[in-house]
Length: 95
Ligand SMILES: [Zn+2]
Ligand SMILES: [Zn+2]
Image 1 (cartoon, rainbow, N blue to C red):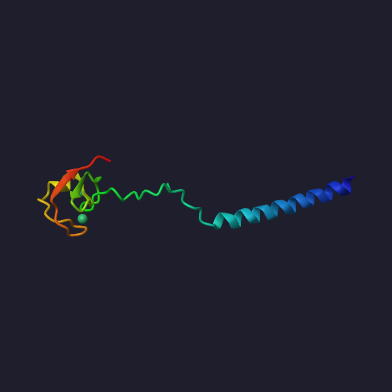
Image 2: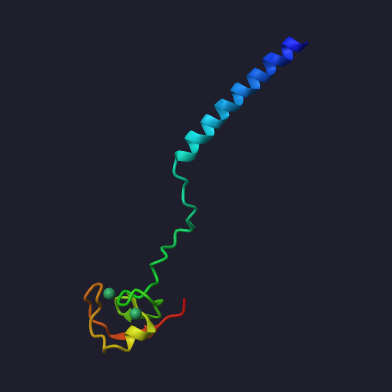
């Protein structure tokens, strides 16, 4: 019976070595970043002017949501910076 247990121990040791090798090689692989893939671009609702605050108004008639509350006050917006369309009015939006 001792012979059998000896071979078993050697087998386990070689198995452990093989496992360690496998673990080492797999740890080199870059881990996929678990970013929220809800389909929503996090920059989508950022102000296109200052890129800091959340968009809070929409240009009509083109419908581009570009401005935060701060940038809205910086000037009298006459044309859309995205499509260069004429702005008839600026409406507040609530996201
Ligand atoms: Zn802004
Ligand atoms: Zn526009």
